[in-house]
Length: 257
Image (tube, rainbow, N blue to C red; front, side, top):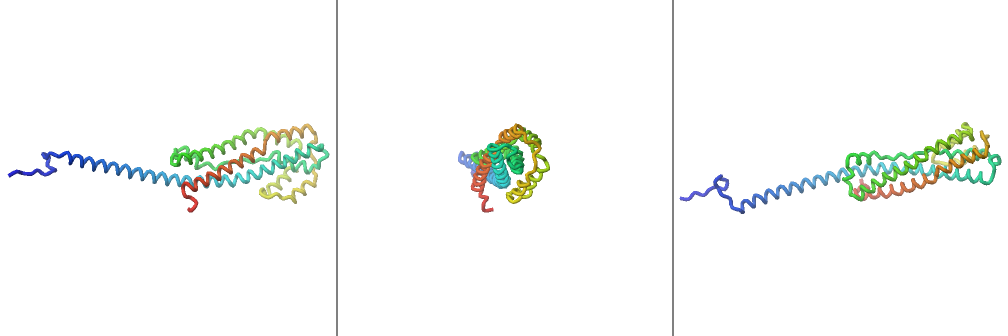
């Protein structure tokens, strides 16, 4: 009587269909494993991208608050410097109430610096995590950071002129009266207290020096600071920051969280 060999018997000769089925099962198992791993990695990367996006939105929102104050400050400073120039265009220094010269002259040395909240971006850049974002989003985030650097580079270019402005100002205006004027600004930085300003202007404190050439040198240095450029840079960055926040919120569904 013929003995049938079991398929698992070592002497059993497999048919080609059995080899094909084994190959197919192995192929499907590897393929499904690959797809499962890919899906898992995509889910992990999307989660990380969303976390980074939320952190970036917080950073840009903080930048926005800082930039609004920065813009308001320099717009007001630029307007006051323009007023000082108009006063000196139509009259000699001694013909102008000294209180006005002190108040409007104070703003030539206006100090304010923009420090971006870039911890999240720097972390993503150093760790290569920008790859978690879509290329368009990653490019926009990098461009926003570039705009921040341009703004800081502009401030650095002004630094030398700023120092010279303060030196010349110290030769014209008495520090103790400048300090009184500055305290009016510092008391309520976001509010223009016209009552206190008018009161200060009417005191007409004396200048240390009325020399026209020295005052002219001061004006030329102040004009070289291009304070309106600071306002323009702040406006551009505020606009781009708003666009980027909207893009990140939309891309990663952050608004409803």
